Amino acid sequence: MTLYLEGKPVSSELIRKTMREAVIALKVVPVLCGSAFKNKCVEPLLDAVVNYLPSPLDIPPVKGVSPTNPDEVIERHSSVDEPFAALAFKVAVDPFLGKLFFLRVYSGKLEKGSVLYNPATGQRERIGRIMRMHSNKREDIDSMEAGMIAAVPSLKNTKTGDTLCDEANPIVLGSLEFPEPVISLAVEPATQNDKVKLSKGLMALADEDPTFKVHTDEESGQTVISGMGELHLEIIVDRLKREFGVDVKVGNPQVAYREAIRKPARAEGKYIRQSGGRGQYGHVVFEIEPLEGGKYEFEDKIVGGVIPKEFIAAVEKGLEEAIQSGVLGGYPVIGVKVALVDGSYHEVDSSEMAFKIAASMGFKDAMKKADPVLMEPVMSVEVVTPEDYVGDVIGDLSARRGRIDGMDMRANARIIRAFVTLVGMFGYATDLRSKTSGRANYSMQFDHYEQTPAEVSEKILQGRI
Image (cartoon, rainbow, N blue to C red; front, side, top):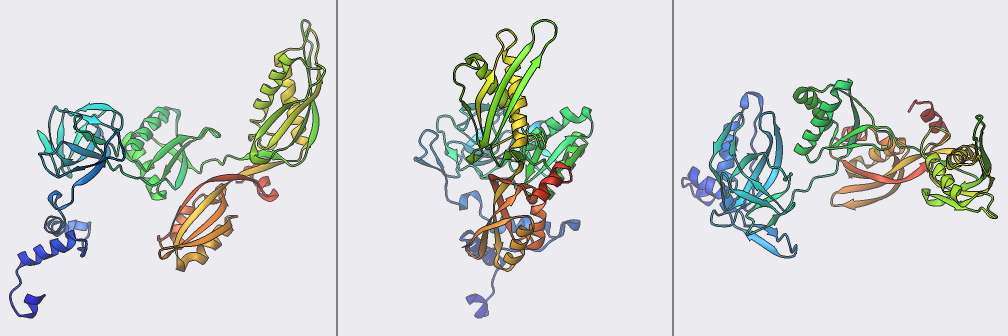
C-alpha cells in the first residue's frame, strides 16, 4: 500500500508473496468467483491454491500421541527424514480395485512393497501398490513422501480415520470426528433377488462414508439407513441403483411403540387339554400393577406348594414371552409388575409347557382388565438457530406435539431444548432447513416413553399413522 501511495510500481510477485503470508497467518481469506458450467474459473482457482495456500513446509509439525500413552505428545515434521506417518482420510469403492484408501502423508517416505503398522488395530498392512489420483485416471508411482496425497488399494484392517505409520516409531494422529446422523429412512429390496445385492451395497457405502449408518431395527426387522440429510440419503439410494443395480423401496422407519397398564388387575390362566392319553394341565392366578421406570418385575407369592417349584420357572418364562406382545397392537409391554399368587396342578397331567401356556393366557387376560394404553417414544431434541427464527422453530415444534424444555444462548445463536415424539420428527430436517433458510441444525436422542393421546392412539392402531 505504501508503494502504491508513493506512486511506485507494485510487482505481481510482491502482491502474491504478501498475500500468501497474510493467508498463512489467517488474516486474509481469498475468494474467487466461478461456475461448474464450462469449467469457468477452474484454472485461476488452481493457480490461487498454489500461489496463496500453505504448502506442507509452511505449516507447523503435526502432533499425535503415543499408542501406549495418550498423554505423551509426539511431533512429526513434514520431512522425508522423519519416520513415516500418514492418515487414511477417505475410503472409496472402485469397481475394479475394490476399496481404495486415500492417505495424506505427514512425514517420511514409503516405497512400494513396504509394510506399515496400524496402531488402532495393532495389525500390519502391506502396501503392494501406490497410485496418484487424477480426476479421471490413476497413475502408478513407486513411492509417496511427506506432503503427498496418494491412494493404496486392498488394505484389510484399516478404516477411515486410522493412522498408518512406521512400526518402530508408532504414532496416533488426531482422528477425524464425524457428526451423528440426523435423519433415517427404512429401505427394502423391491424383489427377493435384490436382497443380497442390497446388503452388499449398503455395507460398501457405509465403509466409504462414515456419516452414513446402516442397522437393522430389532423391533420391526426393518433395514434403516441414517445420514446427514434427505439429499444425502437420496444420493445413497440413487447410487444403490446405479452402481449396485439394486432397486429399493423407501419409507419412514416404523416407530417402536410400547404398551403399559394404568391400574391393578387380577386374572387367572387355565390350560386344560385331554387327548386320550396323558393330558395337559396348568392353572395360575396373577395380580398385576403398574411399575415406575418402565421396567418389568416378577414376584413369586406362592405358599404351601400349590404350584411346585419346578413349574414356577416355566410360569416366569411364559410371562417373559407374553410381555413381548401386548393386547392392543402386539407391541412389547413395559412398566408392569406381575405377582403369581395362586394356582393348582395335576399330579400326572401338569407339565412345564402347560404352565407356560397358562401363564401367557393369564397375563393377556389381566392386561385387558388393567386399562392398557399405548406408549410412544419421546426424543430429547436440541435445535440451534439464529435469533430471527426462534418463533418459527418453537411454533413448528409445538405443532409436532413437542414440549419446550428451555432455551439458552450460544455465541449469536439460540439453543432450544424440547421433548418431541419420534413420529413427529419425521421430515423435520427438511422443514427446519426451509423455515430457517438452512441456518439452523438439530440433534436428537431417545429420552423416555410417554402415554399416547387417545385420538392419536386410535389412528396408530388403525394403521393411519
